[in-house]
Image 1 (cartoon, rainbow, N blue to C red):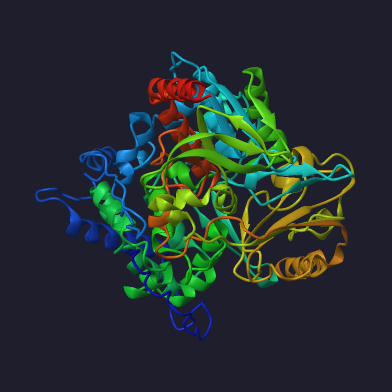
Image 2 (spheres, rainbow, N blue to C red; image 1 turned 30 degrees about the vertical axis):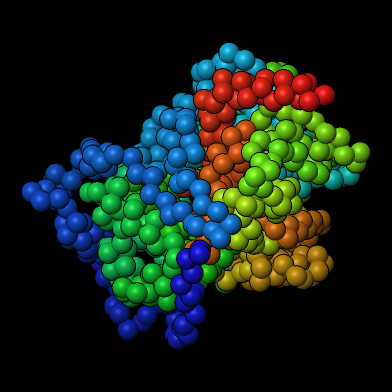
Length: 628
């Protein structure tokens, strides 16, 4: 039976201010030195015999060498089911290229971007007819590779636009509406490779200062400032040591907890550190953090906003594995914590170039075309599905036959489209154990620059041409522990290409989570404006001129403890049926990079099986003709 998750830790009462006035401020150098010594001392406990961790010898080259000294790890628990047992997830893959996207070495693989940029580099001998259910990022990326490999590809999308959870569209007045706030971390190597492949990477992405800024009530700012002459992990150490977001006591607690974390072991034994992280999926981040020295103040003021930004859950609810996976990336890759944002909307900057790429290669995209069912053959002796024949689409339930089918859906989509008979396989049955989180994206236009707090005159000035980020305020992603939208941005500054309007000011966009989702759209706008004014008191002098609310009742899959083992791989027990989507198994969680990885993995696997799939399709066609 599936393993039971450990209970999520309850929130502990937090008394007093996060800035503990009983401690006298320590010199910054002392805090950095103490943090560094804690990390080094802890790392020494994990170091192989004979390895010196003297600072003069612990350099990037030695860390990288140690990280690569062990073979690829694909550790993953397989969940049994009362319906039947199947082989391990790893056994389902035949493509070596797909396997490079998972496991510990995928974090250190510097060739992933080039692979995504250059395409599969293989053309199959026999073209296959491939149907893809869903035209989100995963489905479109898979279609790119499959078309380049010589296959006939067709996509079916229920919405009137592509993009999935990264969708955007225009309203009747020409305003760009988004389904979320989309930020590109510097470690999105596969997605960046895809954008390079369409020729748009340098054109549509705007890099931000290497600072993660927290906005507190009253306009008080805190930050994790990663700008430092020495890269990760030192740049991260000094960022945590210098942050204004925490008081000294919480900084010390942070240093103690992070100094005894798997991240430290990974500096000298990367596979060992990552294996420790993977084994922490059954407890919450709070439970892990508070167990050995972490403080509730740190969770409340820093980690909760980050957790909400990652998965729309607080630290008491989100899996320790999910949070520590991100921290691991930040610790080993300096660029991982660098943020980029599109110059305009996702439709223009991300999707349109992919659509052109696909259409240039003969790929057909069917919009507003729901998939009603997946036609398949069943083994009469076992009742198990053995081969997919095609998909049933549209209002007339038209059967469209394909040699292979990819279900590139989100969690609610895949639950709707899977036939009941598929649930006899544990992999498919486990999908129904995954839950999702609700979100509401709110956009509000103001007649001035909301995040400008230094100059009242500059805040009110919307005259002339202030395009290309020349408006006043903070041009970056923002976090807050004092608002119900934990991450937000002024799109007129961060993504001015289509969000700046001459003669108008800020376009603030934030994402509410479950705490506010059930409120009416009118109430959400009112609450967004009021909470924005609390964070930026001077903005009370400004007026809201336009607003939009988009509710998504089932968004990202819920990264609560114990869920990782239920995520399916892209290859399935049915040889010509595949899964893609950011919820499927890969290490980048439910994200744009995760969706991209899954699409590339699906394509790699289909291309690897190309000859066998073609032979099976020919045999099925011959059998059908004989039966007729």
